[in-house]
Image 1: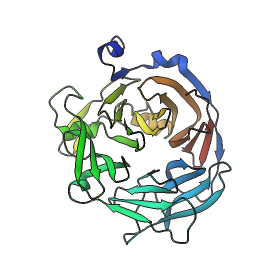
Image 2: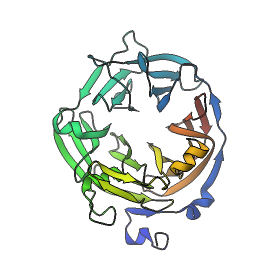
Image 3: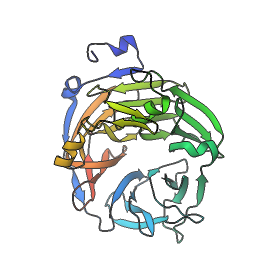
Length: 340
């Protein structure tokens, strides 16, 4: 039924695709792995201005490694671990921010967003910190929406996207959870079913949210308030049980977008398609990278020869950096070729 409909005719803001409809767009990529001795349990990456930034899931004294983006030579580490001023207990996500010379790291446990220099400095503590409090405390997946505001999603509430000022004032919301799945479920249950990666570009006002449990991705245009919905390639809603904390998804349903990236030209989604049992048998790591334009159309299906757990993209140089999932995790680099 999903494939039989014509989304462009029925709803231009809803795009639906399947593996069959995009099979002609497949392209195999061969990666080159780099072993970085300092990496222990690498989690997320960010490429910015010729630097590759990698945060650690289990940090020591610091939690961000900075590498040369071309040679992948190790340069320095930063991000002081702790609970004091300028410190954070851990690193959940990493993003570019507004300033060309800095980057930001978010700590979910500490509920704090911290800014660091892109160049080596003597002090590994944060230059600036934004701490969550009151209503803002419930926000997750923080990403800059301007030089003084964040786009987020909430643990509870009817809205898909919620914008806050840096002082914690709630400003505006975009989209509703109601009607996203059949049945009469509370908003926080539907939201939990669609949890995943949020990333934005404050200059263009574009934001993406890629769901882990359901093959669903959304593109928000802040200026117009328009949300483009992308469903595929499996086009299925997982069986789940509604509980007070959210949604408990059945373990035999394949996982979907494990990571995503919003670029100037394209949107990239790292798709799993494996159940918990298949992950136990085959190991973690994904090899399917779906590429969309900003209107939600599939432009390419990149087949990676090396499984990765997360990634970032150098769009100008057309390179993909991924974290490998083998016994000695490192960085694998793929060259790709996409037209604008």
